[in-house]
Amino acid sequence: MKFRRTTALLLVLASGLASVPGIARDLDQDEALRLRREGVIMPLEQLMQHIGNAYPGSTLLEAELEEEDGVLVYEVEILTTSGVVRELELDARNGNILKDEEDD
Image 1: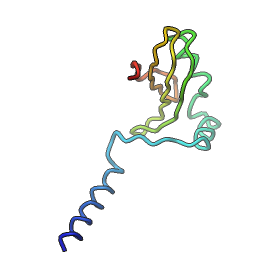
Image 2: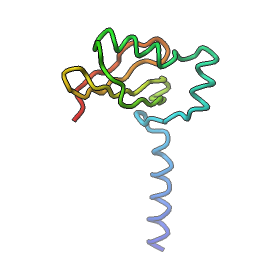
Image 3: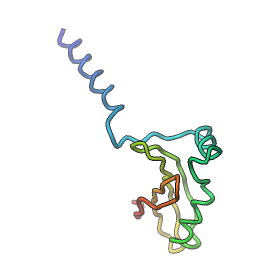
């Protein structure tokens, strides 16, 4: 009986995690393409211009489109000309840099 109660409690707790703020959801390429066609998000190429203004000559290493707390965000890793890897988060709607930190 104790096992069933514990299992039920774990299931309730696990199901509640889906609604916890701060959990990001990765968008697949089909969703990203649809959002771009609808004009909801900027193309990554345009966002790279914003990054190029802050870090001229930087190289794109990785980019992901995520939804964080209802906000569409590009999470981007770049390699600067000085050899430093930086992780940036950009608002996918307007290109504003939301986070900029050196990657560990």
